[in-house]
Image (cartoon, rainbow, N blue to C red; front, side):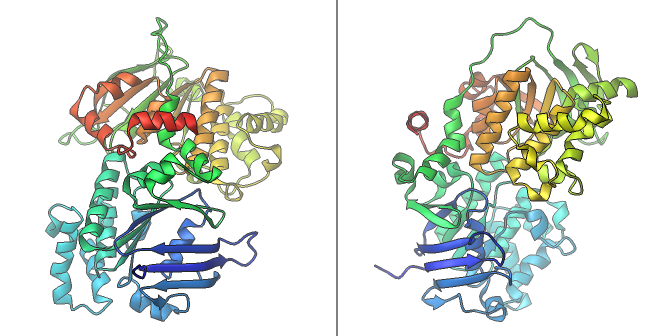
Length: 537
């Protein structure tokens, strides 16, 4: 057998004061031209392994074991040696393009710099930059060279990062959650292009993801990590049909693919007045430009879940902000429990905002880092004058218990909690106001698959117990299909499809909806197998 491109033996990484090693006893080979997906929950050691291969571990990290690349030992290289090799040996695509590109440098300058820093003459690097931007699928790259990152969409910035990673033709490309913040269509475009480029160049790809459906679609081999250890390795077919480790089975059960088996039965049409009725809603930011929201009409029945899906820029968030009275509408009507919301006075809106609460996408950004849980969760109690102040502590403890958090967390701050715990705190804070409608804006996208499943189970239990109505905004179509009674599909400010969930998924009414469904991760696994596997797991 030929020598692998990457060979790791008994490799470990520890941090002073940490309870356990970040990576321990890792044995791993990556063959030339192979696409390997590394999956596992947050804290499993995936990103630490990738950082070690790219020479990006922090100074405090203590590493041991053997790390070989094309027969050369990497674990003994100092930072100066890494600067000479990084980019040539290993290209790295980080997760967040918003923080990875320099905001004060043009796109052209950053792509060119990736080559000139390794000795390529400027006259050669400039035309090469144009070629790279074309290779990653960016249109009119000549105009992009002079633009700054804030002038590009998230998907375009991610393509720029891929171009930078490929600039010096490295034999290994590492992509750390490169599409986790992107909608399903842009995600597929990015991954298609990345897969095509590494195949054409004969490069190897180490793709880190918490989305098992993506791994099943893209990998030649999948590696499952937890608590710093490699638990299982195999082809997608092996892991799908015969997972050997209980944790792998847990990941499969928690994945969006398994949620397809957990579809809800659509409720019978109610003759009651809808809780929320949106009619001919319009929002135009620029009189000359296209409308952000254009003639949108729908209703939410009490106690049901309606999901709003569509690409970034489709108008989902603007629609939600108008419903929440955080954004003005240009025209139209929003009636809640029969009362008009648009144009309502301050006193009416105060009462309305108690009945309609928002759960944000990023719980860490939504919770005040300076406050403890008692102050955070009791904030709506103070704002809406609910109960006596002397009773707030008991109310907060009851709310924490309701979302599955122990009372001994009461005086902890958000930074001392896990991502799943923070999202539960955000839900508890929303419930404190005793709302009837929760608007959930991508509430799962920052969480790994097992925690996503826990939060979804919590939301469903709360809905059954409290009779809550949900407006669920998401780009995860598998989850949407599993939890929704009704689906609304937006594109360019308009509703292009709406109806009961199985009707929209089974008989989409627009070409746009059909394209979205075709872009779902996990499409290479037949649906009959999804259902069988979900039952057997």
